[in-house]
Structures are given as structure tokens and as C-alpha cells.
Length: 236
Image 1 (spheres, rainbow, N blue to C red):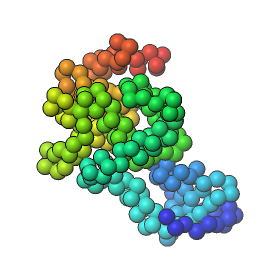
Image 2: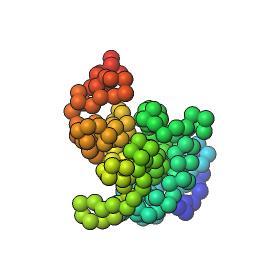
Image 3: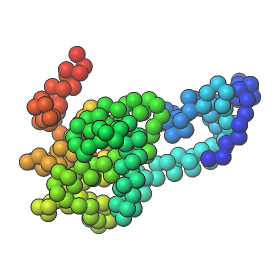
Image 4: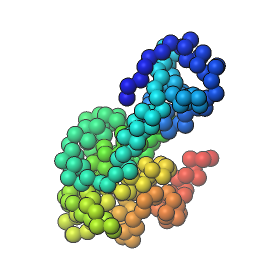
């Protein structure tokens, strides 16, 4: 994204002499900026990264940048690419979610850590697109170990190829859309844990947004409590 650096004084003069509106929080996350404003007259966007780093960019270029960032959710899955890049995305997962090598395992406990870290990363400006492939890769590798399965290319209801995990027993597990729907619709407490555990339970309930599509009192966590009980305790 090619933006032009300007001084704080220039930015203030532009804002004081032009009608403007604030950029929405999601875009700020993509920009990793403190604040940003669109000038209504010519739609240029002033981006404040900090008190010393201020830039201006045409809105059209900013729009294209946003579309590119969201492309992972807007375009069809590329299963071969997902499978090919699993190892590198696992390394990104460890770095992104701050899991040191000595504590790294493939377990639901790590997903507990991820669920706890999510809001912190959001507040730091990490966007959903950055999290997506690392999460898909980790959840896929976790499912492989829990089901003695392997990565394969399957098909969704529209007949398009998608990355799946096929268990030793021949059952299919979803590390892709279960994660995509959480990131698109909004993370809720325990979302990533439930997205994986729900596929392994006897009722084989599959969900896009776990905290939304299954009654909270029917979701059992590792400690034996229901999700409803855990959320109520947290809110007290």
C-alpha cells in the first residue's frame, strides 16, 4: 500500500478545513493504526499510526488493500495450497498466538489458550485474515492426531474443492469452514475449542458459529461444566 507521509500539522490542517468521517475499527485493525479519517471532499484517507507517523492515501487504494486482506474469506478455498503450507502456517500459529516451542502440543488445551488470546490480539490490531490459515493448519493437524486421519481434498455442497481431514474410520472433519465462520461472524467464548470438540462428540454436531448454533447448556467442556455455566461464572 503506497501512502504518502505527511506531518502532524498538515494532517490537522486538512481535517480542520475538510468534512471528514472516522474509519471503522475493523479497517483500523487491518491498517494497524491508532485512528484514520476519510476526507469527504476527495476521499483521501489520513492514517495516524502514532504522533509522529501520519500518512495519506487515496481511498480507492485503501479500498483495494482492504479487499485484498479479506480475499481469504471472499474467494473459493484453495485446498492444495492450504495443505502445502501447513508447516509454515504452524510456525506462524506459534508466533501469532505466543506458544513457545517447549509448550507447543496438539491439544484442546492449546485451543483454550487461543480462545483466551483472541481478544488481546484483536486489541493489538491483529486481523482475522492473519489468523485464518495458521488456525486452519493447527486445527487440521490436531484433528489428524485425534482421529488418526490425514489431509485430503474433499468437496463442499456446491461441488467445489475444500481441504478436509479424513479420519482413520473414513469420517470427514472440517478444519476450514468451522474456523472461517467464527472469524467472519465474530469470536465468542470457547469458540475454537467447541468448533473442534463438537466434531468429535457422539452426536457429531457440526457448526459454523459454535456459541450461536448449539444450546450453551448442551456443550460440555473439558472440566465437565457446560458452556453456559462457564460463561455465567465468568460474568459474575
